Image (cartoon, rainbow, N blue to C red; front, side, top):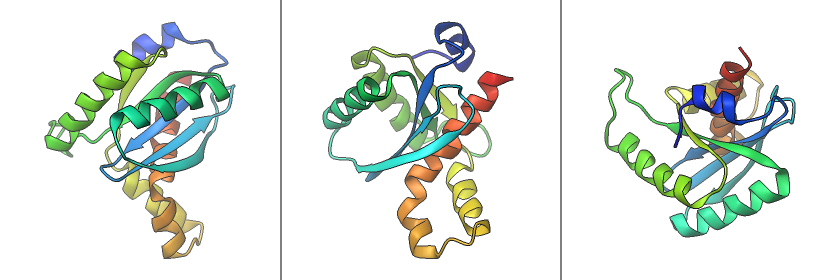
Length: 151
């Protein structure tokens, strides 16, 4: 794994990135456009195993010309790394060893809350908000990372 600042030197200005909100049951996935301006919700997959997720990610990378993966890191509000963060860090390390594109952890504090609140402002009903929360959280994570990369 590399840092977001290291990623700046490893990808093109026109690079599609994949955003991941990794839950214990569901994994939200988002993709940005090739100009790295807008992150878009892509889909949600059920988490079966890390190996099956890696197979899915490899397929997405190939089909969508992805140059890097941004994985949300659930850091505690005080900035410390709890059990959830350590679990994501362990999974991300395994992913980065088996996937050929750079993998970066991105602070995802408030991404789920932000995605839920944004969809409520858009007047989306609660059942749709809950159903789409994972891919919307992945979009929130990816948008934060691409905004950082572009500035």
